[in-house]
Length: 318
Image (cartoon, rainbow, N blue to C red; front, side):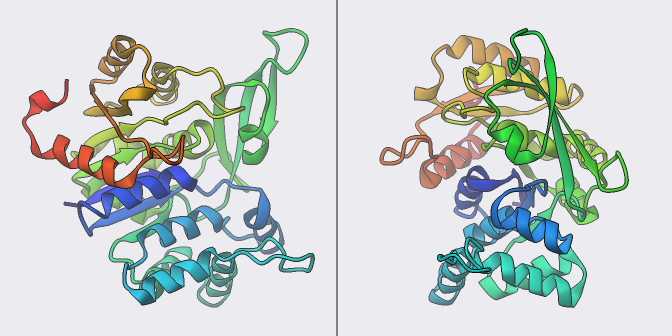
């Protein structure tokens, strides 16, 4: 089964860790709008794709043998101290060096996959670093006043309420999708969107025209995996169904087969079912949270839930 997961950060890591338990044919399509930390520094200094989310996806799919896990640990190792390397992850620097030598971001990621023993593939949603801006409410004395916030980190940490996000590329207002990512979505049997930072890691994939069109056209089973808890800033106060409402606002043509959520994270299941039906989807409520780490999905439980949903009859989606 060919599976594609779209997202970024820890949410995408959880999805990839679940999918690799189901199939070796996993492709990660990763957001490239990060402008903070080590990724932001390398992006500004070298003009490269922000490597952080790409690095995390590579580590999540690394081979489970000693070699793959050692390289995953090295890629995730972050330098301490106060010097020029402080805060940089080794994997970010390796990806920067490969890009300097090879010049092609897709070739860089394919070589990195070989290094870590990844059996699937990691792709950027665009081969150019993207800029993000958002319309935000609640930042002025007038609660209805809308302010524009620019930059992924600023949007993710805003104390206001995000209403809408937009993407652009350097030198153009329309971001261009990575062709290999578009083809992966078109060829997929299963496409997962979420979990993750809703406005800055999940929704951006819907704002790249060719990728959006591929998500609409693909014959794959499309599944939304909802977050366990609202995120401070981005989605503070959001109910599970509000996440789907926002998704629908940004991609009104897109339909899904299922919405998967943690049963304990949905206070009003009937409202979620109604919102899912608006996307053409059925609702799957399962125990998929990690008991020892609140707010994190349990990859094994998530894999079991996805596997059962895919293998059983359609009345499973209820």
